[in-house]
Length: 156
Image 1 (tube, rainbow, N blue to C red):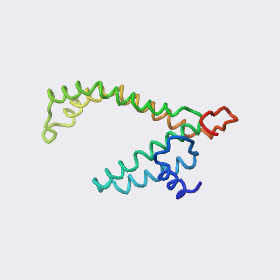
Image 2 (image 1 turned 30 degrees about the vertical axis):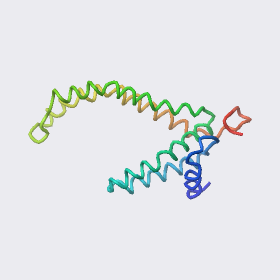
Image 3 (image 1 turned 135 degrees about the horizontal axis):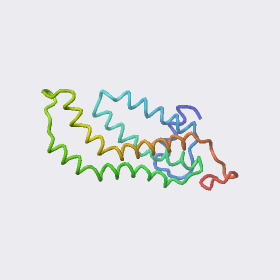
Image 4 (image 1 turned 90 degrees about the vertical axis):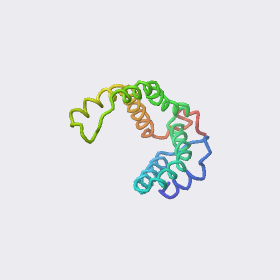
């Protein structure tokens, strides 16, 4: 599959959660989303609209690629782990920020670092979980296509 074909297939199948997406189609789609993200970086409204417009096709391509590698699409729910960890720490982060307000214009770099370090430590479990989930999916997306003869029950 070529670059244009992969993008066309992603938009045509934007609501198709069944089937599989090849490695080539998946990585061409990722390249396209990267190009769009870079191209709309300095246009906040356009960038936000592009992100919203690409979210569902990106999710479906990711689900189909996960199936192509022989895994269940339910693995996409792993993304909820870092979100949940951050959400559980959010009240503590907000309370800390309210107690330790700092004037960034007059504070020294050391004072700023000392004020931000506890916030980073509070968010560390979520950051580690996010990196672990990203690494897992990166490796999963690199795996070759697994055929039905190889035990992949998600493809025909």
